[in-house]
Amino acid sequence: MFPMLDLPCLMTGVQRLAEVAKLNKLLLAYLRRVGDVLRGELLREEARYRWFMGNAAEVVDALSRAGVEYALHKFRKPLDHVSVDLDILVKVDDIPRAVKELVRRGFEVAVSEPYTVTLVRRGFIVDLYTNPSFAWVVYMDGGRLLKCCVEEVEVNRVRANVLTREAEVIVAAAHAVYKEHLVLLSDCLVLWNWLNEEVWDLAIEYGVEEALKALLKTCSLVREGLIDTPHRFEPYVVFGVFTRKVLRDSLFRSTLPNILKYLVRSDSGLRILARLTRRSY
Image (tube, rainbow, N blue to C red; front, side, top):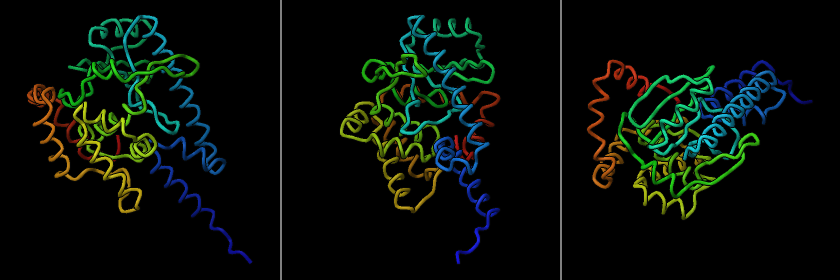
């Protein structure tokens, strides 16, 4: 005779895993796998996904019609997901036109900073980047990415410019190490699915090979079951990667003094504290 399943304990376990999946930006994929076990949560997440993709399609259609040179980045994943915002690389000369067109579509400018403009409409957030950066320090050349690593895909039946899969790998690695200091399981899935020789060539070309190595090492430990995600990089790892970046990357070096301007902002302390203590991003 089979033992009776403890359904309350089973449900608690499934819900706890859902929380972990959410931290790792894999909630939709997880809920689709468990199906009817968390049907209510699945229906809500599917609705959020349709809402996000519908808004994303409208934004890229608006930018295309306005003649803006752009590419979605940190957008393509091996599994469907619902992001907290839509990140878009935009040619620096096209930023005013992009902002004007989105404002015409009902968006409002929430934040305007060096290298980034954030717009919001009814809870949907769009971040327009000229360069991937943190604290006003540029760690990748966005203009070069737009010239070399863009292709067309369909987003909600609308043609959209996106970064190639290979470029997404190096963007994910650089973002995890330089900006967030955190690795999510979704970052590892990008790496495991799309890593190839071209990725390494791009990483060297854009000066982020040390970040790629750090992500690869961490994800190897994840695959072996030695660490869990989200995983925060050890300080010595971040320090080593940053030091080599300073020595080898002239764009990074030239914008590094901007961090002093960032630190004198009235809210910079709270932002830094939040970044250092949060479990995910």
